[in-house]
Image (cartoon, rainbow, N blue to C red; front, side, top):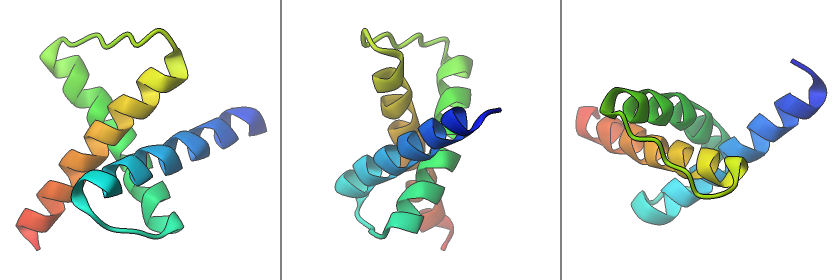
Length: 82
């Protein structure tokens, strides 16, 4: 991976984490990043398992939405377990 790809993942993670925090609460840039990056993996896994192919017209927008949905799931599960 090159630096551009890593920066794109970081931006997607932060945006997804922020979107998740709007829905379920929480805050902080580091928390956004961690939640968003974990959410990207979880969201991608869930969408793949469910056979859902989300196409919003832009690959980055689609990735952000999938990661945000995954981040919401991660936060809700973490709250249930805590």
